[in-house]
Length: 128
Image (tube, rainbow, N blue to C red):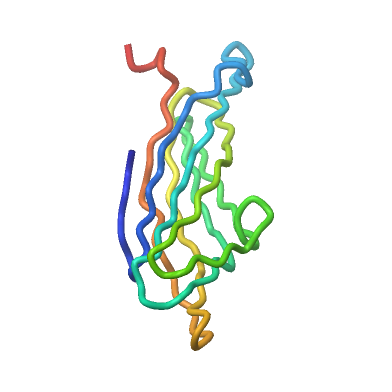
């Protein structure tokens, strides 16, 4: 598991290779990731947007931006957390992702960025 804290928000990421949704012969490798967002601030926050950078070991880089995460813009109260699971497809057995969330302090409506730490995605058979 990878974790980092920025702007009072702790982001933890755990990845899983999705064997049943992958087809290595066709260069299709599917990964799932679980993200936990913990609010260590004294104010509630709302996750407005996400911005991802996805690196495949074949040299390709993708950028993905959008509103919220998995279709929602969660509010996270002080001392609470929010977690979700999403996925990423790669064309090779190895890759990594990192990014940032745009959040808003609910009390004063000020926006700020929270860094999502870089995490690896590796097909288990590649590690042998």
